Image 1: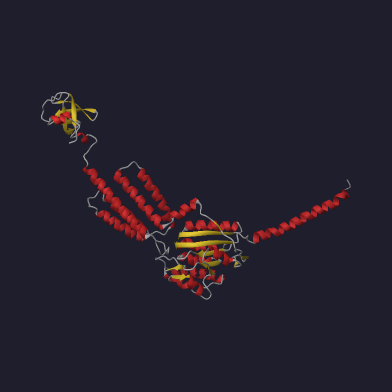
Image 2: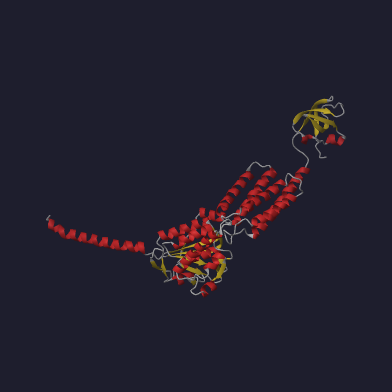
Length: 457
């Protein structure tokens, strides 16, 4: 074939390849630089700890990898550990996806986590009848630090929160007081500030998605993103099983309950003299409590107080205090549980009062039942071993003159009569004592016993 005939075909193929390459080169930047219209949401409940950070960090990574248009963090936190909260707020501010922090539903008091995360977010939203902030200062300082060091730490937090809010055109007048003395701000107060301290107020998630439509967000890398949320429903990012377990164990109330359950299991092991099952349960409870101890700011003196409380209760088993040590242990347990969490490091974090009352009543009832069982077993006559033979009737198998063999409890025993008298084989005698495997017996008192030797006394 003439090579010239191939020229038009080669030219067309070259042109098609060039067009495809041009389209692909234009499409890649658009796909990489512009987020898609997808939206994600994640919900924060309970105490904000390192376990919460792990869950939310995964949500941010997923939204960034999916090039989502927006990630909504629903905030319903009861309190926060400041050492976990502040670094994560920096991660929110540096996110490569628009992050909306939304405090909802009504009656939610977002605490310190609201102050940090609303400030770091690209869009700060609240539902009606909600608030954020803490009555305690938003900064963690140690008692041994000098005043100059504390001022440096406070100034650093003030500067950081101010920069975040200023970048998004939000009010910064409240920050200094909130950091140094503590301050709680409602959604009405936040909107009334000039400029407002938040971006918008939305009744619920549907209203939020409507109000987010068309909002322009500037990310930390300078990229500008326009939100397209109208009529869309965000895809929820659920916690996996491991995250659910860690979030559960990081709750201070759960920590307290696990410590008490572990102590009760050990107490039961000592009372019942079991085969190790209760000890295994105690170890399981205490291992679960160990995670909470690691992620929550614990006052160690209060933790020691809880241990001493159980020490007093257990000691009551061996010391004739007539329940006095148990009462001391219960009082010490209440005081220690109320002061277990260092609220200076974790504003708004504490053991629930209902849990303390419930546990104290449960432990008190448990102690009462244990003491009753001990007293009951102490009054019960011995029914096993050599001592258990005393008072029982035995059949003479080898004539007692005065020593011979008797049959009782399925075995032959060497026996002797108390008064040295003789007893014929086949007759019945009563065991009155046991001396070095030699049973001391006496004749039965009546013919009724001989007719019915196994009757109860």
